[in-house]
Image (cartoon, rainbow, N blue to C red; front, side, top):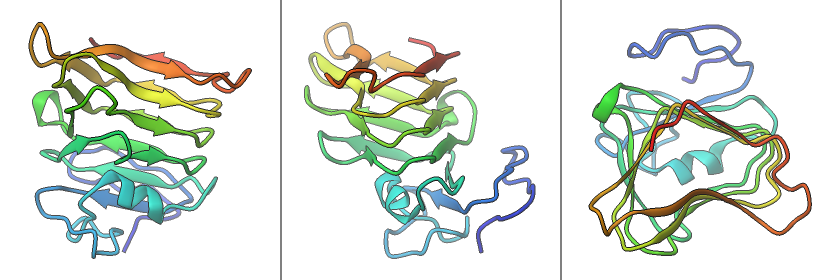
Length: 178
């Protein structure tokens, strides 16, 4: 079952402290038919894990090393408030997300969310943005890498914000590399 109410060490991921639920994602061994609260039976996609979380519960989504996912314009919507997504691994062993269309983006509309320690690859001419924030206050993007696949295939922007006044207040972009 998931980790709750205390620290636990997972696959070298350090201590996970939460009073919420922990969900696991792996494209290598996962299935969206799994419950996803056991690292031996993870979900296959980040969006399936997001759909399993509870708003403002302190839920954490752990994305396993070697996970690979293709991002489209609608494939990942971080639309549940208070969710943290944490990639395990170092260097290129971290979870990888490939953007293969100009409109491919991860939409964020949940407040108080974070995305940490993943690798994002622009693999199309002029990908508009890796992340598109709607009314998503206090979003944190930390310790990720963003790379262009070639000189002509890559990101125009890492983060774009919507037209809502103050909708992205508290945005933190920390320790990322591009």
